[in-house]
Length: 306
Image 1 (spheres, helix red, strand yellow):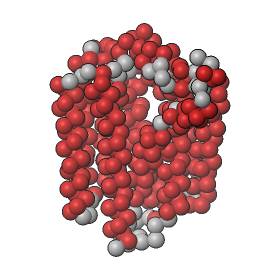
Image 2 (tube, one colour):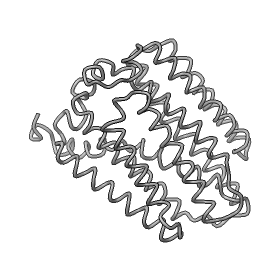
Image 3 (cartoon, one colour):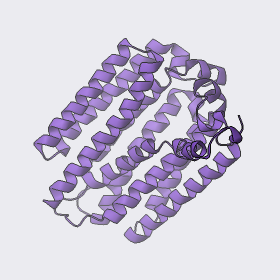
Image 4 (tube, helix red, strand yellow):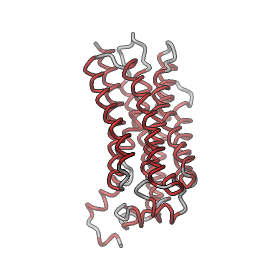
């Protein structure tokens, strides 16, 4: 299809859909989680500008990776997701490359600003380069390796939590906090599970493209079992987070309800591996990550202010 077959509104909308803004917000929330949860109890003057810039930088890195992901997956998406901007013809490959580079540059500029105003001597810039570079390497190379590609995503998630914790330690001092790292490791394992589950509906396209997902290598059922296992690892980390990281009863109740939802998803995917349910599961997990992280951030900020 040519662009002439689409309305201007459809083309503009495609520039928003290709960056997967919710994924970007979740990435920003992960970094913010590590930053806020590591704040010493005596801190009340939270630097909201730096916090917002950290969220923005992480989100921009994720967004540029999503653009390059769609470029790398253009052939598979002709089968698995023909509605996406590139296979549908709303955005050309050349335009997508330019768009991805612009977003990546904006992420780098934001990181420079963070380091300058906080005196972090390149910590944010280095994180953006490593985070973005590894995600782009995943898009074009590691994704085809199946579980090793999934592990790359998991490690990047954990690194975001670690960056936030290290940022706070260097700026505010005090004792380095390990709870965000533990929760980040669990979140990383949970994201590996989500990546494995993401591969369940795309077996046909991935097999034709030579992508060695666990669903392609071992079948849908065994892959679902492995994905569920990683979700149970996420449950363990989530429980630790609720016990040691939340200050208010209402927050704890919401935290346990979210954990119960993840438990349901971990069990349900063992029973039902249909493409529709697998897709629904990975979308719900993304929202769960965002709500869970936001819960902790709000709880900690309220605690410090009051």
